[in-house]
Every structure is written in structure tokens, then in C-alpha cells.
Image (tube, rainbow, N blue to C red; front, side):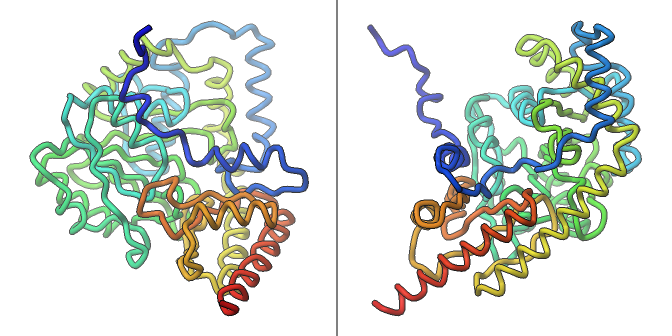
Length: 392
């Protein structure tokens, strides 16, 4: 028989995040700091609305773009939080998580050979989704000395005549980096001058610890060239509900909705009813969870610095990205030994791009009790590595 597998799919490596998670799931007494999932339960009033929708028999398809009621709440939320207004009927589509929105956006705008600028380290899905949509990923390596922010100079250096869209992944997974208004204004200037779209992934927008999140869509001249991706997984602890949304220019959202129509039909109906309640009544829950993450963030950064590991202070999401370059090991070697010797799973920085070499992603979306135990083991491991190094 001939080989029936598509070459472009076979050539995409599996996610580097899952490798250590799968190992730790079979290891007694192990602690995982590897998965970016809130440790909070979905707030009860949101779960209750989902349950109520099932009890009422609301198990039907919704419109392809999502419940009208939910799209109206999304529009009201974005107006309240980022001061941008979207038409809920023409400029909004409800998706199966933010990841589907990313995939649909690329498929809606890319022709074969179009270049996609992807700053890395960043979320693992951007590059494969660009490839699957026929695009050509162009990687921009972000630098620790810039706190992993994208600079105007780095962007200009990567732009060519084939550039069609920039991915703007802030607040950032895995680094926790943010872009403030001044940073974004410099990026917007280039995008307008060069006539480039931007996919702004704002899934961590509510988890910002240095003032309110600023969306590039809110800057002059940018709303009409921004596809905004967001969702409910991180802010509302709704990962398993699989619900996100995309907002943007009506002509792009129309094509994204068409793709969604043929591939998915509609997002889960009970999840959509639950999300209406989340947007209407969930601000207090978000604030409580954000405060808890901020406490853990400060503890983690302080502890890393106490043990002598270099780590810039992250102001977004729920990750830290410390450097382990002093040990002369690859990120994968460090993570493997740490798991084998201390039973703690972390993610090598290379899972998020080659420029993540020499770093680790540690999630602090875990209880303080687990964090204290895990970082105690990390301190012990680091001390042992330094002793080994001195003994050579």
C-alpha cells in the first residue's frame, strides 16, 4: 500500500508540553508544574447555569456563530474591559476554545506562501496551525534582556513583501511577559505602515498584574486590522467547557464562521449558556482568582531569586520562565533529571520555540502547598547541581 499520510502533518512534531505531563501521571508522589490549567473549580453560579440549561432541555444546535445572547455579552464585556465595540452579529464568532479561533483565523486569511510572523517563545499551536493553513512561519526570537517583549526593530527586521499577519501573543505563555501601551503603539505603527494584519491572542488578558491589560485593537487604526482571540478557560477556570471567541473585521469573521460551520457546526450549547452567566456575573470571581495568582506569582519569583536562579518578573498569565543556563545542560536534560530525581514535572523552554533553550516554564496555577513542596525540591536539586559543578 502507498503511504496515505499527509507529509505536512507527519512533519509537525507533537506538543512538547504533554511529554512530561504524561510521564508524571504514572509517577507516585510526583508534582506537576507543567500544565497551564487553573486549579480553581469553575465558579458554582457558572456551573449551575450550565446544569440548568441541560435540565431545561437546551441541547439543541445554536446558530453557527453562537448564541445571540452570548455574542451580545461578549461585545458588552469587550467594551467594558478594552474599550472596543464589536457588532455581535457581524464581527463576533463563538469558537471551541481559543485554539479553534487561531486555526480558523489562519485558514481564513492565508494563501499558500503567505508569511506569518510568530514571536517565540510562545504558545505551541501558532506554528503548526500556520503550516496547516498553507502559510510560512517566520520566527522572531524574543530576548530575555527585553523581558521577552516584541520590539519595533525585531518586527521590522522580519517583515518582507510576503508578510500577511503577525501573531501577538501577550500576555505571553510561557514567559508571562506583557506589552504595555507604548510597546503596542510602536508595533501598531509598523503594522499600519506595512499593511499587515495582527492576530492578538488575549486569552490571559484578565491575568495581568501591572495595571489593566491593553489590547492593540484599541489603538487608532488597529481595530480594522486586528483579529482578537479570547476565551473562558483561563479567566473563569472553564478549561473543559471548551469555549472561546474571535472578534474582528466583518469580512474576516464571515469567512471564519463559514469554516466553523463546515468543521464544527457550533460550540457546545450548555457551555454557551454558562458563559453568558460568566460574563454577566463573574467579575468578582475573576478578581479573586487573579489576586490568588498574584500572591503565588510573588512567592515564586521571590523563591527563585533566593535560590539564585535568574528570572525576570512576569506580569501576566500564570507562568515563570527562569534561566538554567548556568548548569550547562539543555532544557530537556534539566527537566528530565529534575523529574527523575525529585519527581517534579516542568516544561523545557524549547517546547515553545528554539530560543527557549536554557529556560524552563513553571506554572504557578497550583496551590501554595504544592508550590512550596515543588520549589523546595527545586532548591534541593539546584544545590546538588551546583555541588556537582564545583566538584568537577
